[in-house]
Length: 404
Image (cartoon, rainbow, N blue to C red):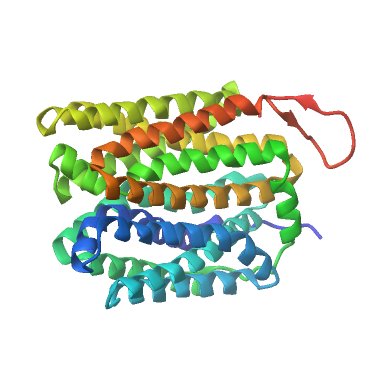
């Protein structure tokens, strides 16, 4: 039977849900100093709120995709976003550090269910001829969160306390839940790869090399980003409003880098784009480190261009990495991209943990040098992986080299 694609207008409620998830996930970096003071824990301990969230998401996403494969899609999305709403309320009311940590675990689990399901729902609703636009409608929520939601969250937290930010995200998530239930059409469950199939793809040497690069690239980013608040505070003397402006700059650069990374991958090939991006990220971290050594009066003219370069290049690498995976296994793109999502969150967990270790042993200004070392390792993994070989179909046959 011919399938008629549905209207993409209803996907706005999934965009709103992705915006809530992105805002909550990224705004923590700007709230860490306030959280640490209010909960009477050290800054490294507060940073573990990022580590635990990211690690839980990375491990839960592939498992929950398999366990929830038989659920009707609209109901699953509504349940996941309801859980995310509840978890934000629990975070806002958390009496102590342990309570907030438990709420972040529930937030990670809910987000790990929602985001892959939202992408799959959007692709199915749009049909083959509108896959790109449908998926962009969902991921656009994350982009807007990075650009606008995170700085607004920092300003809200500065004006009304960190608990107010979780209440604000809960309100957005609740609105998304209502919209999903009221306006999204029902959608039957679709086919999904079994966990054993996902693990089999991850064991392929060429795919594993790309995933390792993703982990290292994101780890470098979150080594600095998790503690960007204390970094710009100590190095440049910026307060909450200054930090919000820096996060806005980083968010805009990230959005631009995402687009540029995709265009460059199409034009020059994904592997070449990743090599160039890793090199630029390395330069940005070195510049951040040099800026940190100049003192507050002279640091900003160096830090701001470095942050622009860092945001655009690092997110450009993430986009090109997705293209590398699709080129290596076109018939298994959905599986490889889900593995890449787990790699992204595994990298953010590792980076947040590394950053906590660095600032517990020395000044926050050293974060840039550590991130530079991680970025150099990522660059070396790309150089060592070679050009790889593209598999064009699941049927046996010759393979040809490609810039994957």
